[in-house]
Length: 178
Ligand code: HEC
Image 1 (cartoon, rainbow, N blue to C red):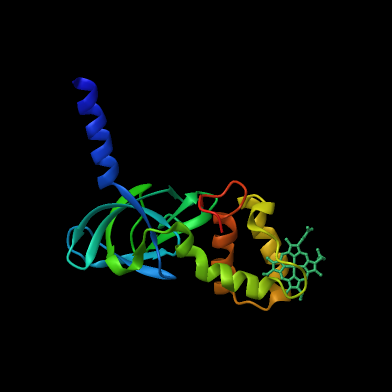
Image 2: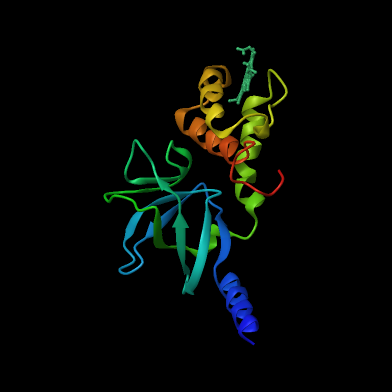
């Protein structure tokens, strides 16, 4: 009897705390109490869905506050795969926000697909595109810096591609196959 109850609790908390992914290049984050805009979160970031509230969804994001910017949270504080950035406040490793429900998707791969296209577009004209998993997360930064000039991409495009390469690196966060 006890076992069944425990199992039920686990199952229902899983169903409740469903993981979804940020679908837009960047999406606004709103304060969980007064719904004022507090920052932005980037595509592909995994979030735990807590509840729906009109057009907004309450989410929880877990990561590490980055070493060089205390308003920024990433998968690793180095920072590797930046998750979100707050406007005026210090970030916490675990925090709740509201986000536009339309900016979330069930599909992890779908959330990265647009950058992947951009990556193959920018990085496969001289040599075959290197697979993200050929390198580790912390190696991609240097490669991309070396290639930025060749690929004639802006700093913003570079950061966007870097997040994709790190997410799908051999030790990256992305689980779904590209
Ligand atoms: C204009 C041509 C050109 C473009 C565009 C280009 N590369 Fe390269 N890439 C090269 C050349 C040439 C080399 C080999 C010589 C070298 O290492 O400098 C290379 C080598 C590499 C290597 C292998 C380095 C090694 O030592 O194994 C990686 C990884 C790489 N490129 C990634 C990228 C990425 C990511 C992009 C897109 C941002 C990109 N490249 C765009 C010309 C290009």
